[in-house]
Image (cartoon, rainbow, N blue to C red; front, top):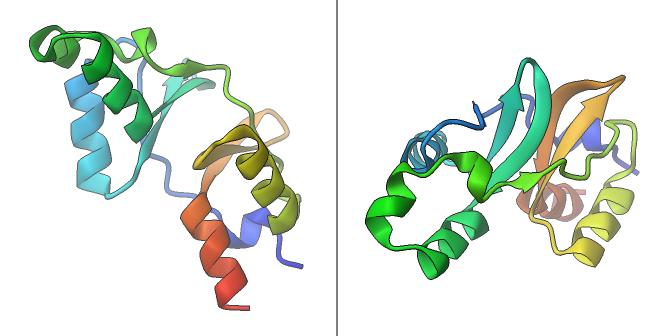
Length: 126
């Protein structure tokens, strides 16, 4: 079975916790991804996703939301997975917990992110 390392993206889309949500949305849109990893001092501190953007507009007015820091709506200390884990293990974790994006950590270092799309493609392509 394939491993997470074989299907993950090692191109990291990152923002700082103090970045405005509009900046994070722009970075995500430009990269064509559904999440940004929130990094401070070289450490993963959260993840900001498309779902978080939807929650922002449900809970806040548009103008304040645009300039609010990512840290106010990100998922702090997100679950991660090791790159040696199987695609099946990643799929089970993501389905069980309702994630669409999962940071990949190796030896305490952020090395990638795997999405539900990455996992689905790996299964359909054999």
